[in-house]
Each structure stands twice: as C-alpha cells, then as structure tokens.
Image (cartoon, rainbow, N blue to C red):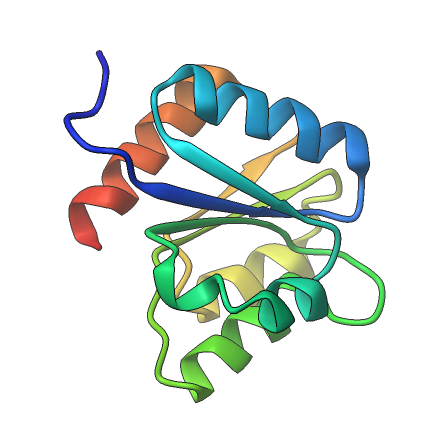
Amino acid sequence: MQPLSIELVSIVDDDPFVRAATSSLVRSLGWEAREFASGPAFLASGTAAHTHCLVCDVQMPAMDGIELLDRLLGQGIHVPTLFITALASARVRERVQASTALCLIEKPIDARELQAWIGCALRRG
C-alpha cells in the first residue's frame, strides 16, 4: 500500500550498510528518505524540523540515539521516533522505554515491522 503523500523519514545510523538498506526500503514504500551518519550530522543539517519520522540507531559514537532525541525535544522539535539496535540489552530497553520513542526494533530489521511502525509514526505526526 503506497502512502498518499511524500513524507520525510530521516535515518540516523553510524553503519553505512544499515543506512543504505533502510533508506532503500523506505523509498520502496513510497516515502522520502534522508540518511545521516551521526546525531550531530542530523542536527547540523536543518532537516529535523521537516522530518515526519526518525529511524535512529540507539548506540552510536559521539551521541547516542536517546541523547539525539533529548536534544530534539530540548529544541522543541517533536518527531515520532523509532529506535533500532543490534544489541537490545536490558539497559537499552529501559532507556528506550523511558524516552518518548514509539518502539525499539532489533537488527536485522524486518521490512514489514518497519513499515508498520513508520505508518504508525506518520499517523501520529
């Protein structure tokens, strides 16, 4: 099912292969995708205010995903956020649950699960 309008999904992950694969999947589903290698790169881009859904790795060097989400909220930017991770430890799960994120998706990412969560995020945004 194709969305009715083009909505921007920003993907922040330090792994270039995950970024490329996730971006390709998002585009194949009919949404616009922009990729960023880090939280600071995403913040510096000016894209946050135009993002309808953020797909973000939890564990990244320099600034983790939860810190990025906190920075966005501190700037008054509320973006429905989906966290992804390869290491879903109990501590990571607790931190995600304490945040405003919608979910935590484990890598490798299941295409149907990601599509469902992005759809949910876009309906909220």
